Amino acid sequence: MIPNPIHKALLIVKNSNARFLVMGGQACILYGAAEFSRDLDLAVDLAAENAKALQRVLEQLRAEQVYVPGFDLAALERGHACHFRCRAPGLENLRIDLMAKLRGCPGFAELWERCTLAELPEIGAIGVISLPDLVRAKKTQRDKDWFMIRRLLEADYLRSRNQPTRAQIEFWLCESRTPSHLVELAKKYPAVCRSLLNRRGLLRAALQSDIPGIETGLQEEEKKEKEADRLYWAPLQAELTQWRRQTRKQK
View 1 (cartoon, one colour):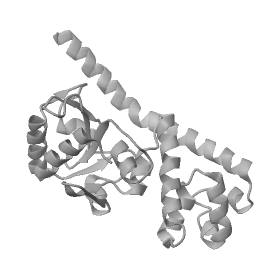
View 2: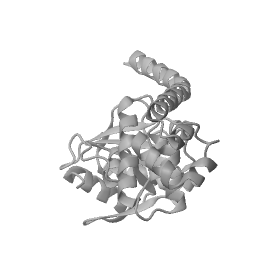
View 3: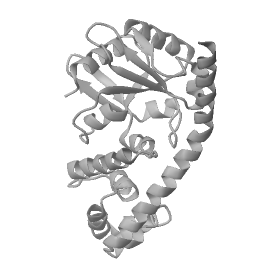
C-alpha cells in the first residue's frame, strides 16, 4: 500500500496530465520487492508542454528546492536529479525527486513505450518504469540498490516461474543475483542459458551448478557496474560542487 502523502502527491501529478513514470522505491513496492519508501521518484518527459505541467505540479505541491539544481531542464537533460520537499497541507516534508536521464537506460520516449501500468485506488492507472529498466537504473554505487535488485528479481521469478515467457526466462538468466535461482534456471532451460553465455559469463558456472563460481561472478559484475556508475557521475558531481560553491558565494 502506498503511504497516504505519496498517494495524494501522485493524484496531483496525474491530474496535471504531465507525462511521468514512477521509479525508485515506490516502483519497488509496486513490483513486490519493498514494503515502504518515504520518497517519490519520477522519471519525466522534458518536452516543453510537459515541463510547464511539471512546473505547475511543483507549485501545487509547494515544493521547495532541497539541493542544487532547481527545476532546470538543461541539468535534467544532462542526467542531474532535481530534489524537492513538499510543503502543501497533507504533504509536509514529502521528498520528490525528478530525473529525465537514467544511466544504462534509454530516453524517456522509450521508457514510456515499455512501461507497466499500475491501477491504484482512487488514482487509476499510472505509468511505472518497466522492471528491466528499473533493474538497470538500480545498478549504482549504493550497496542497498544491489540488495534491491536481488529482491526485485526474486519477486518476479517466484511470481511467474510456473508459466514464464521466453523474454522472462532470458531476463532472469541475465539479471538474477540469487545463485540458487540461476542454477534452477540453467537446469530447466539449458539451451536458453547457453545462448546467453556471451552476454553473461557467470552462466557457465550456473550450467555446472557451481555456486561459488556464480558468487564470484556476481561480485565481479557488481564491482564493474559500481565503477561505471562512479565514472558516469564524476563530471556531474564536479558540476554540482561548482554550483554549491557559487551558491555559497552569493549568500
